[in-house]
Image 1 (cartoon, rainbow, N blue to C red):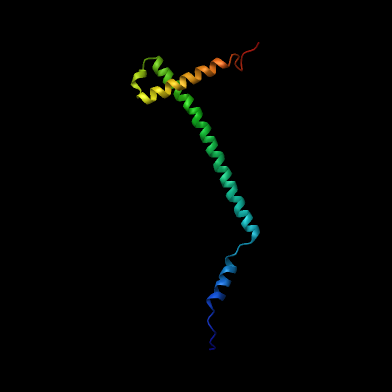
Image 2 (cartoon, rainbow, N blue to C red):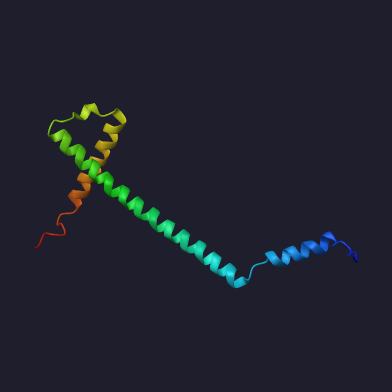
Length: 107
């Protein structure tokens, strides 16, 4: 049985390197998939943030109703929550004051 000389480490590395090297077209597809995943994730995060803002309005309205019906007292809320609630209430009132003609009002 003839003996073959062992491959030098440099030669073996080049062979392994050659098999691991990907086709540029495959790389582009891979990057495209990563970009698509990133954009999809970003879109989901934007939708979630918008949903959070909408939900905050629901909680504001819920607190208004609970306080108005006497289910809870404003002073039942922690001090920090009272301050935030008052600040948001002021902002919402000033926003309503600037909208003299709402979208549904006709002249």
